[in-house]
Length: 582
Image (cartoon, rainbow, N blue to C red; front, side):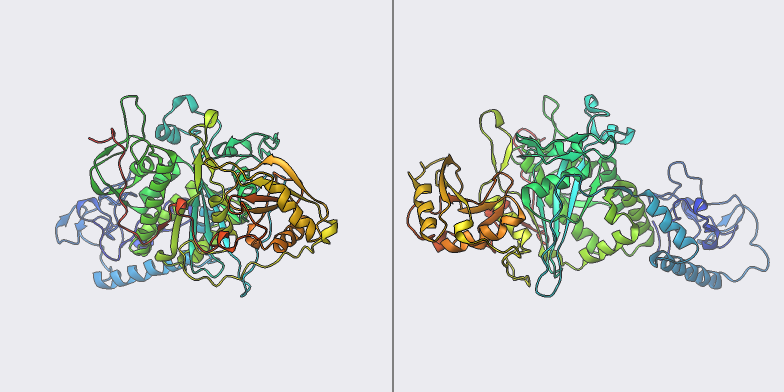
């Protein structure tokens, strides 16, 4: 066991020009009891009492006394050496100086070289490879802007480590899939954080993307494609573009990690507690499952077992990708709580292990491509208290027929969640310092010059649409000066009434149409599925000439279908699917 005031050896020290002997008492004092190094650090990188794999022991063969007073081989201490307590103080001062050097960027010598070493390990790619520019953030009243980062988990089996962990030999070397996608939103005032997951089975229209390596151009899809295929159409930048296409949320950065990266990070963290309601073994007679095997109650998982937890679907809840998403949220919340306990982040050796693992494991966008930028990002994330972190899943529905088993955004609820993130509304329902949604800078054209297409979306799975509803509402618009308003017979079932527009130059016109009928501005949405300003009359306005105020969705309430989970909730325990217990 390591003792207070000890340290791990710096990885790659000799390659980086470090003189690691400064931290030892000298040739006669490097060894310690049970094979530990003389300064009390573990001999191996894994924190054990002996050398790590492929690592030579730090103990020399010289004789001398160890710190327990027992006789060691190698003869007496060198004459003229300082008393042990003075050497101990000197060693502590050197140790503290080295840690400070690592924490201050630009420091000459070893600290600078170590940062260069970490910087060099980070993999970087372009943020967006779609053909549409990302929108600018809207600042709040204090001039602050939110921060949005897309977290991507890749199932790439392009290395021996990933192939060993990922299985599925038929996929070795194949096109990687973005099997985990989570949008991390940090509020403009840094008071709260939201994490929104999109199940990998979600079907959506893909934007045009370009492969950064081959230059191959993938045209925008005309049919729905499973969202995890975005990674193979242009790398993580295309996944960002797909999210932006669906949600309209401005994305600042992305961070991507693969199987081996998850394991190395989980090992560096040192274990995360999770809970299961019954014994679970994610393996059935057909061999389906991640292999995860845990006993009922709380278990501390790390390394490969942590990867199994994050990949498990067979064995959790209903065995779906939605169950896996819930398990991932539980793990992330628990991991944040563990890190914030402080023990891991105040131990220099563990901090270095985390730094090494993180820079080895991550692929980031070029705007985040540096240790200093990652450190600054961590400082921003630390400002949010645990009880203001909310995990949520995109509200969804299952497809039917040929799309059975596939997931689609739930009309109304999914857009409500995306709108809350776009408008920087906290998902935990607590007060926000955000700037209220304002009108666009795009001036509206005169009503008589604005074309409006009105569709009847009043139907649902249980109700037939109100006959001639689009014609009736188009007549209301004509009466308000929108003489170019016409009805469209295309059925477009939707829960909440929406005014859609295809491009920024029509946003002002769309907002003016909404205001003329008393429809909330929050119901005005950008959509590539329309070619002009389009009013879809929803099931919330089946009759009458005035939009019912009570029908407007609560802009400050997270839909129940998002399965919101608070970061401070440590009482969550995973429900186990029948047939996967032991």
